[in-house]
Length: 353
Image (cartoon, rainbow, N blue to C red; front, top):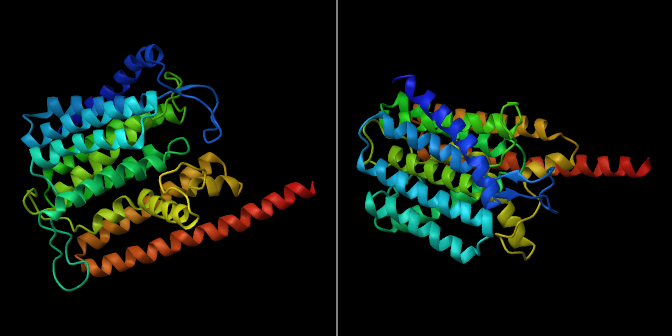
């Protein structure tokens, strides 16, 4: 694979970041501080658009795109546009959902791409969804977009989760002869690098930026699309990746989403209502800095993704991989008790001063 394409993805994102700053000012596309968002000043919400541009440019110059890849770019462009509108106008949940479903329909029906086989999850044979897989794929796309949106609570976390998912999937695809998935996953991960430099203020050449809903929608769609091509027989050009491996590659965002939505419903709240009770918020309240929280959660995501890779390559039975994942989720949940105790002790110490 030519080194030129990752460079194109990198430069494409970097150039788009430069171009989008005046656009953000013209459209007033900024994230302003509020009770839930405690950053300094108005920050441009252009990261998602720039990353999409970087990936799209690198794909278009790579070679003649397959139909499903062209349909993905069309669907992703629609998702990014809907995300920009949501960032600008704070769309209602219903209107945003309609737009997301329309955009997802492009790849589901245009490319006949949906999840119809979940593998031998229960130990009694392969779980076939048939046409029910269409609804399942819609739910998977919406869940992934929501999960990556929820994890976007501190600098660098969304970008790190996306890069870990893309790069690990790229390695698994390379080990199993899935050349197209390998290429696109690598390019998507590389397209995120310039965003990370700006989001973490690691590059003095660019101002600080955020992903915005456009970014979380794009990352969620791209992850589900690539995983579908990797795990479903009719799209794979090499050895199939086990469907349950998908959970390991998106572990932290999915675990955070499931935990927070269950907690909200348990407390009688709307499961989609925003709050500051995500895993990264608990770390902050327990006295960890934003950078320490980023390193800890990224390390956890990397370890879980690595285990998913190992289990897949060892051809571990899918029901066993699922049980191990549920065990990992139990360990993840136990973090909250530790963090609550630490936060309580910190609060009591501050009151005594």
